[in-house]
Image 1: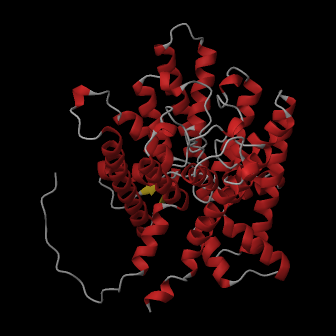
Image 2: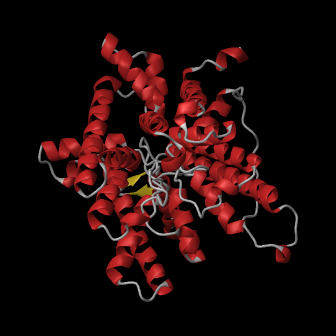
Length: 442
């Protein structure tokens, strides 16, 4: 029956995230959570941004929220980083020493994309590693000059790829501080490569095995991530150097690499993005759209999807029948998922950008008002990729535009593939085949 599909295990993460967002917004509306009252919409936006580990803000975190409010945001970030269902299943596992079939589907699909995976011990490993990495990051940031609370806040925000900061200028005050920036980059990287890869890396280092001993997907994720950081960082450094000739190469490279890491769903910035060249912002849009890796704190279409697309392009050029990635052919099911993800993401973003453009710029002729197209594209992709970078227009958007961004953050955190799968479960399977026809392409 139709109503039975509303309580399917696949929908549990959707309900869990939605309930946590509403609960978080209610807590942020309490009198002692803010220094000045905020609207329900701003509270809902902040809670969504925290749970979906995005980092877009409509009010300043450091000045508008009290310590209690900041701790609430921090708790929402931590819950959203690993996923509410992960913590719920962990509690039941530790209590009953087993994980139910429903938990396997809900958490396995969200965390590992493999509901058959044995979750029990893995859940414990993930949570212990997360706490350990965040504590180590907080200690390093504290020794680098941050106040203890700020160090703790930024360590969790960075590992969960949230981008929230207690500083009004984000991390611009630490520009040139190599120790702080490298620590933040390391936390972002570890939080964005995926928990399965983290466990695989830990086992490799613990057992002193070679790089080749890592799983195929782990090597694929790491190589793609390093390529994006290296090529992206150098490209951004060159753009910034050309735009500001007096800037030293060392500072340009540091800025470039930092933003190449941060733009892939973390949302921290050390420079004022509103003052950067359009080509710099467009390159950041590409990095934000790619995002991190599967089963991580990151959003975006994911590094594995990018590699499948690249493998498909190479296969077409070489006339291959199979899509080959890192020495192995991608199976048809994975390839179809990648294509569906790209098509759905592109369609969703196109519709959102058109909606934002209409809401913010109306139907005025292009020459009569300053075009907001690039800023709105940047804002939409940042929300969908759960990044949090902004050119500074978030707070000035209309209420309906903020609701559009809330929707993008929610879909982006859970993943368009999750919602596509849910829609497919509502369809009756076809027990016949349609006749095929040839069509001219290109």
